Each structure stands twice: as structure tokens, then as C-alpha cells.
Image 1 (cartoon, rainbow, N blue to C red):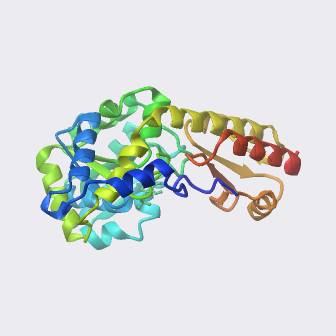
Image 2 (image 1 turned 135 degrees about the horizontal axis):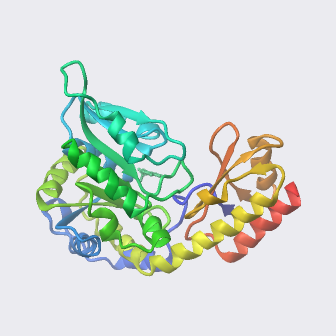
Image 3 (image 1 turned 30 degrees about the vertical axis):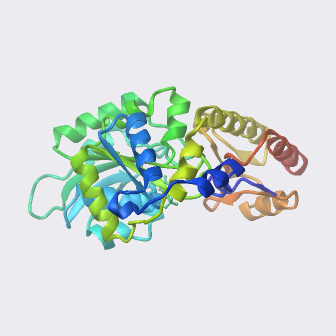
Length: 339
Ligand SMILES: Cc1ncc(COP(=O)(O)O)c(C=O)c1O
């Protein structure tokens, strides 16, 4: 089976399983798990922040961050395609009592002017604009990247209005590789940020929240309140440490493979694809001849599995478990079925 539905479908490698089996553990709610502590320390250094916090999922990371940054009734400005708005089961309303202000953009990325226009005047009738949230890379927009210049220009607007700046960096690893900019530089403008181990990096579970000491201390309290205090979670942190090892080379391979597949899709008359938007490990394209269901079924006949991503749209995602042979097989199947 060639599973291109998502980069979350990866299985732990033998090295990860071995590290999990051998991991030194303790009770992390007491702060006594040496492997979690090692992961958090290594990530703090890598990300150039005071402190980090290991959490079970990206969704919990987003929700902890929003809870730390807001009060009930506040508003969060974000792109309409963002994960927080689309795929978190209304959690930000439920957990933090905040209102989301989703902005329509041409390509899934906010511009400074979008943010400027979305900030509400300070009047009692309005929700208080409090947080601007970016997603880098922007998943639903096809894995497109916010470059550092745009992040800084948005940060200027954030600061001018005394707002707070949040980063959903589930795939910041991919952005860092695509831009050849360090993770630390990409995170520096934000008040709080997080990255996932369980997407393209291939770990089974976990994300890491990064920020200043006091912010991460507050995040630790919210993690516990949400039931995310994990005990011998060094078993999971051990896999995350392995997942980080050598990630840049592997993600570069995923990006190259995404481009190869995208170039094939772009050649086929049945599809429409903007190659400019293929910047990382995700390929999204529209079906102009036939239906999304037909495309999925015809590829499934080759045991290649892709995901529907809108009424006319299909998503293909590259990840750690897709090797060059699988990419060649996918290209062959696309040509056989749709040329
Ligand atoms: C951009 C983005 N943010 C957040 C999440 C949530 O992560 P998790 O599935 O670990 O809750 C995802 C999941 O795919 C994502 O793509």
C-alpha cells in the first residue's frame, strides 16, 4: 500500500521502537522523566527559546497556546483555511471562550494588510482583537510557506496593535527546510509557537510548545487542566528524539518527491495544478475532467491512496514512509490512468 493521504499515517521506525523500549522514564507530572526533559532541553536549544513543553497532540498544543494568550470574549485573527478554524471541533470556543475571525485570502496566507484590516476598533460593541495566529506551513493551502520577511511584517502589525502572536508550526520543519532558514529564526517573532513530531518527521505521538519561561510555565498548567499531563511519557519522547535526527535530509527528499509528482500532475489534462504552490511535502490539485471520487478509486486500484480535499480537490502528501520506488509507482499510475 502506498499511503499518500497524510503525513500523519507514518509508522514508528525500528529505531524509534527500539528507543521507546529502552527509554529511561520517570513521572513527568513530577518533572522527573529524564527522556522528556532531554527532549524539552534539546528542543529549547534548537528553537532558541527559554523553555519547551512536550504535549500529546497538535490540537492540544494549539488550544493550550490560545488559552495562555487570551481571555474569554477575545478574538483570534487567522486564515479561513487554518487548522484551528476547520479541524479542531470548535475547541477554542469550548475551552477558551474565544471567537475566531477567519480571513479569506487568495492563497491561504495572511498578508500584513489583511491583519491590519481585521483588527477591530477598541469599542465596547466589538470583541477585543487579541491574537494573530499563523500556520507555517499552511496545510489546507497546499503546504505553502510564510517567508521570514512576511512573518516580520505581520509581527509589526501585531505589535502596533499590542496583540499577541501565535504560530501553529505543525510543519515548521518543512518550512525551515524549504526556506533554508533556521527554526529559531522562524519562531523568534512569535509569543508562543509549537511544532509536531507526528507529521512528516514520522514519530507516533507528540508536539512541542516553545516560548519564554513564564509562558511555558502557564502552558504547563493548561496542559494539566486539559488532561494532558502524561506520566512515563519518555516512551513517546524517545521516538520524537529519533524522529528529529537527520530530519532535514529526509524532508528535502519529501519536497523533491512532491515536486516530481506535481510536475506529472501538471502535465495531465484531467487536472489543474499551480506548481508555484508546491513548496513543501504537499501537492493539492483540482480535477477538471471527472470527479474526485473517480480519481481516488482509480488510484486505489493501484493500491495508491490519496485524500479528497474539497469538492474538486485532491491532496497528496509525502512523508517518511514514502520511498523513491513508491513515488515512481505513483507517477506511473497517474500516467497510466489519466494520460
Ligand atoms: C496545521 C496543523 N495544525 C494542527 C494539527 C493538529 O495536530 P494533531 O493531529 O496532532 O492534533 C494538524 C494535523 O494534521 C495540522 O495539519
